[in-house]
Image 1 (cartoon, rainbow, N blue to C red):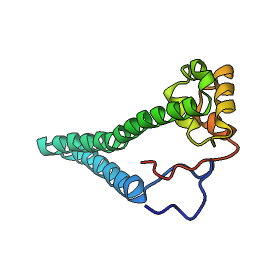
Image 2: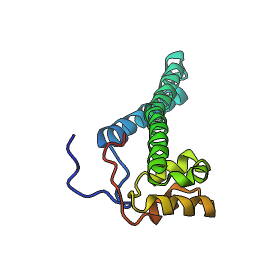
Image 3: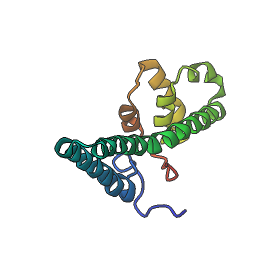
Image 4: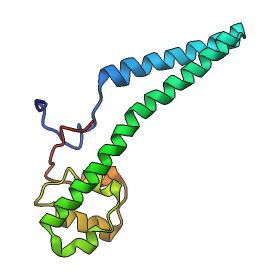
Length: 146
């Protein structure tokens, strides 16, 4: 996998896959909308079944995205715990207080700033991922995000 040409930063780190997010997402919404229209106008068993199919497609669209992201967040949590243990083992008790969400946000921090930033986040009880990411000065890109 080749790295993107544009360097990753807080402003552009979110990943959008046009074929998935825009084409497939729009298509699923159109199918649901059409099936709701058909159910309202035709009032047949087939039209009602179409609504169930549309709802199932929406659920599948959401789960297909969230399941791999949840697994990836678990892996990131482990990686960041190991990285913190390597960079500042003397503060391991403090690192145990970090939540999975905080660790996922911290993955973008460089090795040089990670221990101090993690300590600040624990001490100030900062929970919001966007806030944590915006605090990072030396961005460490993650081009392998699902």
